[in-house]
Image 1: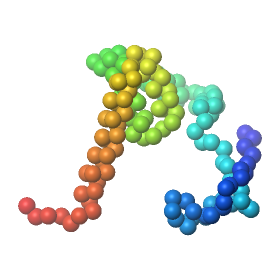
Image 2 (image 1 turned 30 degrees about the horizontal axis):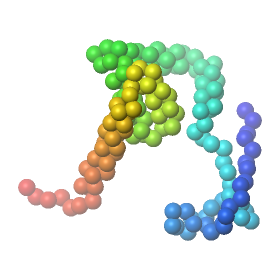
Image 3 (image 1 turned 180 degrees about the vertical axis):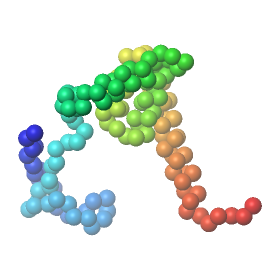
Image 4 (image 1 turned 90 degrees about the vertical axis):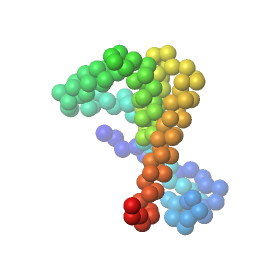
Length: 141
């Protein structure tokens, strides 16, 4: 597979600051390294490489994926809304795009997607709150 070329783009000022810290940027005379995007939907066009090189596993994956999202005790729409919540929580751009579209195709409204986004946010926030309890000494009783 051909390597993607490294590109540089002009910086306003190469300060070496990232989020207020003195971490070094990939700077070269006022230029910043511009790496190829890891999350480009065009990358999904490479899935046939997986299928060609691991056909049994990929066949099993696709069969599992189809079964997981079929109507059952839980509707296909609800499953896609759950997938959107998980995608937002894991912050996977591919999943957000694909399951957001699948949810809309299954009938999801803007209101449903907005509410499911808040569920995902509440779960992320709740995780931070509950894990924060590990910062404090154990109490008796």
